[in-house]
Image (cartoon, rainbow, N blue to C red; front, side, top):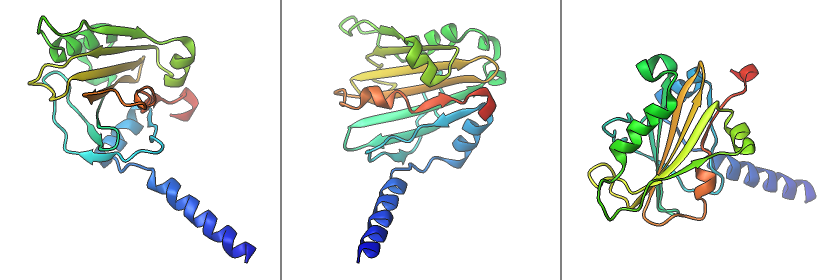
Length: 187
């Protein structure tokens, strides 16, 4: 009886763990692997893939939506050779995207910029990273707020995590950590 209960518990737990994995688009998963980026599957979420809607200056590779969190996530990654003139200037490449996505409305709150501390940078394994919170242009995204986390690793490329929402979910800080560069030995 004890063995049967242990087996049932193990199967139930493994089923729960596997249910947490989000099915990524195979081309996106391949691109992540080529650049050396890991996708950190969110725990306890109901994220499902959604069709991609590209933004003018940001080609979206994977879109996910959580009904429970009322949160849309758009992920985009670029290899260094795809960045062109911006390959060594992630701050300028990201500023262009923010200026394109952010609302020009005079009543919109100002763009908020966050620099990450050493512990957060260690998690991302990035050479440069910034987070921007702003109101998106309504033609770009039908949400009241956006949070863009931009990550750059020299010799690898850029990763963008765009979170779109009307009210920030309690999980917002964890969702900015969906992508991270691998350690050099793990490429």
